[in-house]
Image (cartoon, rainbow, N blue to C red; front, side):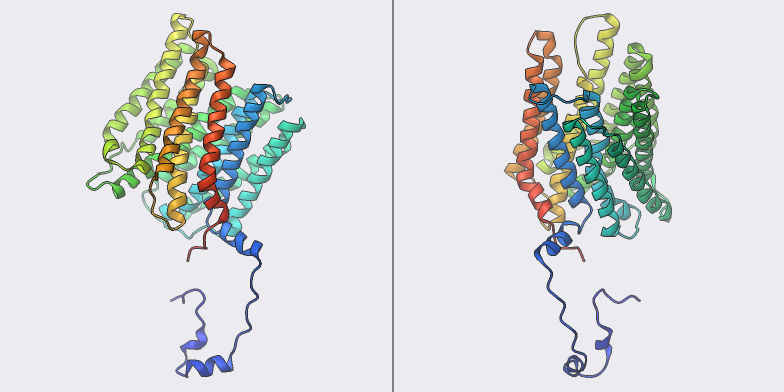
Amino acid sequence: MFKPSGQNTIFSSQKSPQSQVLKFSPTPMPSKGRFATWYERFCAQPHQPLFVSGMLGLIAFTFLLLGVYTGALNIGYGVIDFHAYAFVFIVFIQFFLGFLFVVFPKFLVQAQIPSRIYMRHFFAYAISTAGILMAFLFDFDAKIFMILNLVAQIFSFFLLFNIHKKSLLKDKHDTFWVLVGLASGLMFHALFLLAKFGVGSEFFAIYGGFYLFLFVVVYAVSQRMIPFFTSIKVQGYVIKRTKIFMSILYVLLFLHVLGLSFFGAKFLLLTSFLLFVLFAREFCIWRLPLFSSPAILWVLYISLYWIPIGFFISFLDSLNEILNLGLVFEKSALHAFAIGYFLTILIGFGTRVTLGHSGQIPHASGFATTIFVFVGVVSFARLFAGVSLNFELDYIFFINLSAFLLALGLIIWSCKYLVILAKGFKPPH
């Protein structure tokens, strides 16, 4: 059997411990400096550095968006770069990789990922994020940093793939679909870079990345963790899921991406309706106890309900185009998913994980509950901005208002929870 870490085999002798100490007095270890101590705590768990990097990137790109739309910044890149690419391929995935680097080994009963490994990923993402942001701000070519970002994601994929492959568990359904989403992300990320060199369509790459990469990864994690958290917190709750749901979802999302990119409104009307029905049916099967759950859970439930809302908005948008009603929805469906679902669940998971892994009981204090409600306000503010053109209101004002509220909410959350992550925790034993 392996001896516990740090056990000195000298003390297995029958002799007196004092005589052993006198005979074999060890050389005192030099005390660590403040930076070394902090760094050891900071990188003790994968989610700490990656959550910090992701949140700082999210705040920075939100302010970049705000600066461009207010006219304070004049940059040489378009919205598909500094907004769509940044949020699809840079920001959100860092949060969920931080989470996956923790739970993948647990799901698959494998050894934890060593800190020296995941810190390499952290530095690659941090450097590429900073480089792309600087390229946008100072108008130089961002391609080299985009390529670095893609390379980092390739290594992240194979790190998780190897853990999945080594596991002897029979049921690897959930981790399989996470890997499918990540692999799709690599493909569409590469397609986006090819489009930057004049080959292919940036819009197809962004739509594919949004739905088949980001949406699939986030939902694959959600459908595993949210029912699990509920079963722990709510006595008597039984987890029920449709086994083939992810297969059906991936096919319909693929068709939805084709509709958005090539086939038009009639095709989108069908895929949006089918996806709305699919999620409405699935969540009826889940029977999540919204009104009998603590706030740390209901924020996760609310994030899920944005999914059918988003596809219903997409259905209405397609119907509007087919009937030529003249209404404007302006990517409202995408923002229902991006802010209502992705961001809300990110804040919910981030709060829970930060508390749980820092030795505190996962709960939603009054402060956290206020933040949860505020994120809901931001979601509705962004949707209203999208439809404000129908009422001859100032669209740019409401876009800036929603961006400002988003940045404000992220900063307020960070003042409490990001500080905990940045300070670091004692390395787990």
